[in-house]
Amino acid sequence: MDFFKPETVLNLSNIREILIRMEDTIVFNLIERAQFTRQESIYTAGAIAIPDFNGSFVQWILREEEGVHAKVRRYESPDEVAFFPSELPQPILPPISYPVILHPHPNKVNVNDRIFDFYVNEIVPKISRPGEQPENLGSSSLCDVECLRSLSRRIHFGRFVAEAKFRSEQELMTKLIIDRDVVGLEAAITNSAVEKQILVRLKKKAETYGSEIKLQSSEEKKKVDAESVVELYERWVIPLTKVVEIEYLLHRLD
Image (cartoon, rainbow, N blue to C red; front, side):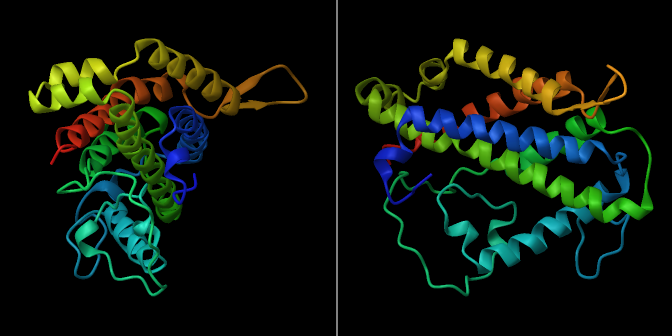
């Protein structure tokens, strides 16, 4: 994605290709996380003592890594949304002047709190077996961070989808926004046929990437439950992407 060429960024065909590639990243990240147990302690505030921090171990790693990445300009990129936006340090590299692609929004549209919640409470229990592995607390937490980041980038990419749809149907979208017609906006941005294709494709990817072929036999060992991956998209990723799109559009005429 070349953010110096807005016409390519807001091309719906290009956006769809990017979202398809994001599916691969998300599936592979979930496969990596599924090799470890649930590790409930890493999501419980205070279970692992951290000086001057009251959150969970995973939240601490997220915050610390975001600080490092912010120093090298990660969160200046239009497609990145931080989990701890108020705690980001200033970059040490010179700033980049990106062309204006998205309409300014009062809070940039950030649903990372909801992403963290459904990931920890719904996804991890479905893809990981119960138990604690003290020797793998760090490894499983780092996998969590990669999963959370890939999900966040995918869901918040809805802002670019919304901007592209606004420009392609400006008259209709303008009327719906002025009327604050949330139901109408949701109908306008929903393509049921595409959503079904996403779920079918995702299941095939999860079954293919998540199968460990044994050369000595036809037996296949599943690394991740494909149905859980499909449920992730159907119940959370697609609906939350629509939340992002609608929130963005409601402020598009500000």
